[in-house]
Image (cartoon, rainbow, N blue to C red; front, side, top):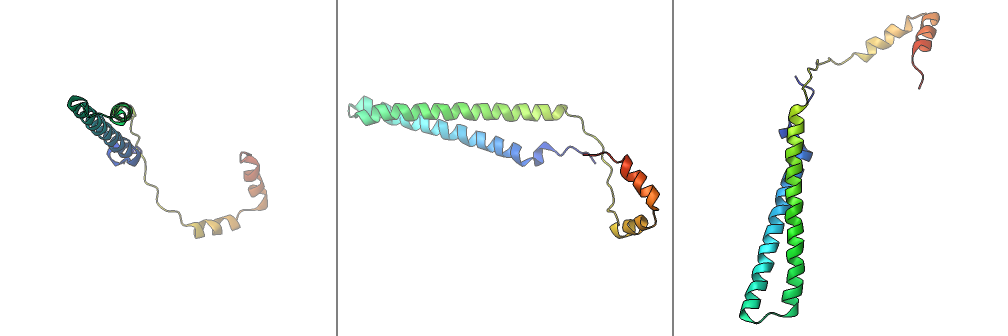
Length: 124
């Protein structure tokens, strides 16, 4: 068994990947839609200032969302590459301790030994 879980099972990685894709797609849709509406209105000669000026702002917002999606996808790729370079370590599976048996063992320890153990323990 390895101590490093698979990247495929990493929820933050999938949130980053799906969120980046969704942001890029939303930005592309917003940009194409607003530019198409603005182009049609300008070509037909029926464009209002709202169509032209607000459409430009929405197209810029769409472009920013596209860039954000691309940066997120690049970051997901970097995380995947860096994760592949981290070596996996083998981990032993430790069985559950029987705490009731351990309490009985401490009752038999003489006072002098328990003080020595307490002195040897690091202080925080």
